[in-house]
Image (cartoon, rainbow, N blue to C red; front, side, top):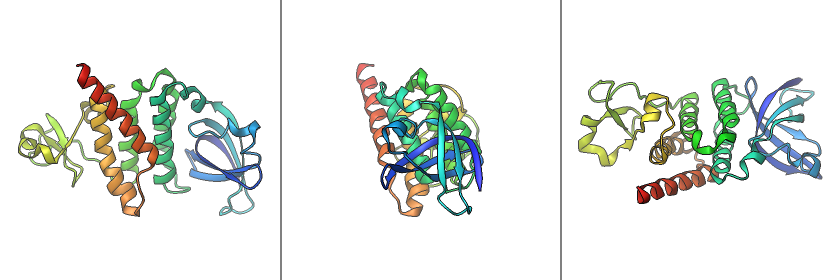
Length: 249
């Protein structure tokens, strides 16, 4: 059994003397692990950092074996993000969610392609891709069968003026219908509703609270698992950024 494909490094754990078990995300093979000989060595440490884009090769005698993994660097996203705390938090959160939420060896090409695009644009600054990151989380929810329904108001059926989402059903609610219950609903930022635009810190915060609710309840809660710490740290960082913007505004 053998394959070679572009991959995103999601997680790496030392194994034995100098080796490492590496979890990757690929387009055709989904989340896939392998044993990288020398993967924990100084020579390979920079290759297997979460967030890096690599050309990976996996070989095993039988399909259900862990198999041997090797790779070549394509884009050192982790190193490029080191100087930007928000970029590093975003990259860590995305890798942790993909590593823990996506089923093993089950292809999710849309989630893979969207994450590759996000990582590729991250060098331009995290603020330029924060909206894309929130949209990626919504895509992961959809891929797992927990997609949000943002097309029309759940109460009136109108398709305009959608401002909130029901935390119970994941369906959008218009401003008029939401007014009596606004305190119990989740805010819907325009960039997530429209599928375009960069948004701002307040919108990113609202978007992360929205997708975070359903990640915690469905993607992770349904399996009795906590939301990854990296995702919580990203949410805290963006919430602080939003609060700072309000204070200066």
